[in-house]
Length: 277
Figure 1 (cartoon, rainbow, N blue to C red):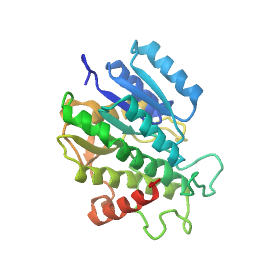
Figure 2: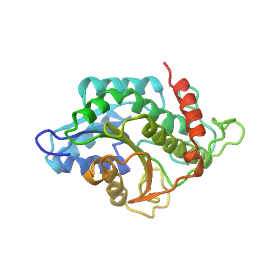
Figure 3: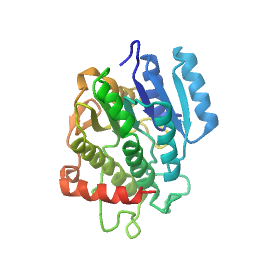
Figure 4: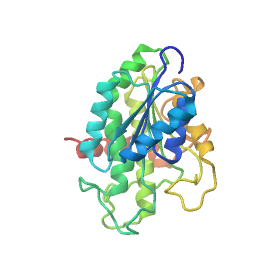
């Protein structure tokens, strides 16, 4: 995806951890990399550090707090205005099972359970609002189909459609695992909707317990997660692969609810309603 007209990739949550490592990896490949985060100082510092480390000048910074849907819409609109063709969207930003504030249930600016809002609803809205630039890039076929990559997790819990916001049975771990499965359902739903010759959608568990700010006891390395995620984002061998879930470098089976077309349709309807302006 490099060359005289390098692919353009948006990585959310790109100021640290997996997102930061992925942004630098893609920059080293000569791609145009759009970094997203919610802290201007950290974001601008990340851009400068990656530019210095890679020599790649084609880097841009976009600030938005994904816990507020209005900011997600604004992020999508700014990206689309700057880049009418977007080759890859990596929905990486997320909140782990443990967050500042302890075990109490928290809500987003829009009143939704916080992990469901940030890990799932924001990525859902961003992907759908950027379909125009993604389709434009995929139709041009310079780099094959455009790609949407959902950075999910092997930690998955079936969605309780009677209590999606977990008002009755809340735990940070359940909230996290439910939101991560929702991302996989979303990827599969997008894959069903989109022409795979134009835009593909996949999801993955990048690596187990990488040393990021949301992981207390690391097992894997950031490099392992970067390798798996970059593979889905830009590897020519995976061009056209859609509607699949990967555990690291291997295709895997997600929690069975992800394979339920009715559950996917139900979640899509709910997500569309909750993200409507």
